[in-house]
Image (cartoon, rainbow, N blue to C red; front, side, top):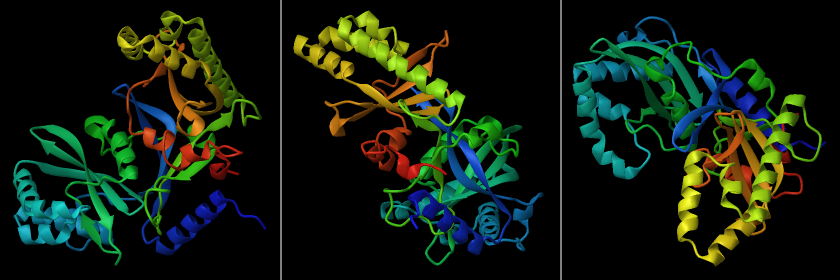
Length: 373
């Protein structure tokens, strides 16, 4: 019997989660944030994590906390409030050895902050890969602010507080989502994905696949996407329409390149992208301009992920490294798709432009290894 990579990962995750589940938990889907030339945009691409229930009330003030990860958080908060640097130091950890020298200074900074702020509530807790993140709300001068407290599971199943939070890719995606929630980021009604968005998932990939030696043995996170080939069967009419619209936009870009007219290209680009291209064209040599136009003209779209309002278009591009390139499109003021981030980097590039998903684009059956049943 042939077992797909997707089925194997899901089985392992479910089994390990069941064995280690000591606290009410459910899978949650958080919108992945796309930075459209700097501006954060929540999308239909999803980060799948585990959400743990958190008890009501100020349980962190009691030393009889009901669960290990809550107990460590309670000890940490009480140490901050009492000024106990020794306990803060013993509960803290680092991801880089070079940061270990900063722990004492960070402990002093937290202790000082807790003299002027009030911890009002802890409303959400997410676990993914080797991290547990508690979303706390603080009051300072009658204003509320949400702050994530990040803990890392150790090999002995102990927990360490990370004062610098985490540089892991899954946390980067989580933090991008958290930062879009505003002052009420710790509230229980913080927006997640809709049921319709979850139902449209066609591909599911472990977030840290290819980034760490061993995937989490407990509750790994996943990147969940909806996509389809340009030529081929689509799962539903909505996806078919989104794929068709984005593919036609690439064809218009190619036609603009064939016409050797800047306007015929820039009219399909964001304002910032068009400005940047015009500035480059003004200084580029004739040979450089021709090379750019030829590269644009040869691109052929073959697969599109619908990360509404973003369309992620994979194109065959002989002159690009690996023969594959990725273009992002977003609806402009008149609802017409525009090419965005043509010369701008975004954290989601780590999903679409590098790593296992990008590598899978060049296979005989692009992305099929991550396809859901």
